[in-house]
Image 1 (cartoon, helix red, strand yellow):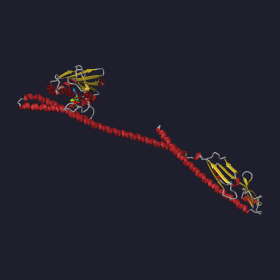
Image 2 (image 1 turned 60 degrees about the horizontal axis):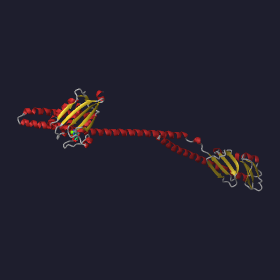
Image 3 (image 1 turned 45 degrees about the vertical axis):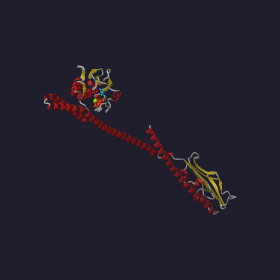
Length: 437
Ligand SMILES: Nc1ncnc2c1ncn2[C@@H]1O[C@H](COP(=O)(O)OP(=O)(O)OP(=O)(O)O)[C@@H](O)[C@H]1O
Ligand SMILES: [Mg+2]
């Protein structure tokens, strides 16, 4: 709509300008015609004075008539009295008087060889408001009027012409072109704007995807630090203990510690492999995962901490629970973070415990990890999934943020709350539709 208004405005403005210019041109041309007409009539009327002066009684009327057909009659005896100079006679004729004689002039015949009067819509010659000759229309509605007295002492006739614009000769085709021209200009300008907007959007998208990539890399780097921290600490602890045992000549006791070290090292290797794959593509390899098995593996990985904290780990995942289509390492990381937090939260708890449960509902698979610790504070309930939120001295505050990302990647959701007994309870929900697809 706006474009149509702009088009109308521009077209009206340019066409209006062109029409005004064309009318001005016409006016100038007609003014020039009027000047020529005025000059020619002046010359012609001046001839009458000369003829009048030269006429004598001996002149042959036939010869005079032949030479000057517009002189109808002449007489060498002047009118008495010889004033006024002019006596209008019948229509289109008048007597011109002088002391030498008088001439009866026929104006239509005098103007017969003039083409100019036809160029005006209305033409009139008058003497002292007495019309002598009128040609063309009445000229009342005409736009333009020119009027001037003939510069002749004997015949000061008043010449008046009127005219109106010739609408048909206006440059209509050019005006049509102006309309088309503006339509084309507006169309191309619009196309240019659309292309520019699309280019901007594309640039913006490229910019955002670059930002998202950088963001993802940053997130990944933070995740790496977090995930590698625990197995490295565990390896250090196992190795130091093994060293001590070997020094104490109890090498056989060091064997299980070294085995545990190998398992933790393999976990590091698996994590690094996953990170490397993530760098190349965002797609994760999904497969059927037994939640119970992954939970047991995580319990084994955190065996040291569980033993040290004397934690009672309760696995309530039903045997009959179907597998979850997910990334096994992702589920392992989720369980690892949840169990690790529960262990760390119960350092001061008299009878620490962690329970994992799983059940199926109509549309989803619901997992919950509950502990017997102090639970989450009001602030922790609000911010537990925010990166870098931590209440632990040596904590990074990334465990739960990472866990939420991993759950969301599986189209699931995670909720934090406190159980009736007061401990923390994390509930994870995965849609079943995706599982069966
Ligand atoms: N089971 C829980 N019981 C009580 N508080 C918890 C529990 N789990 C998490 N929290 C609270 O949420 C905070 C954030 O946990 P998150 O795992 O994200 O970070 P963190 O454990 O402090 O550090 P890290 O990045 O090393 O895991 C914890 O500092 C703690 O205050
Ligand atoms: Mg943590």
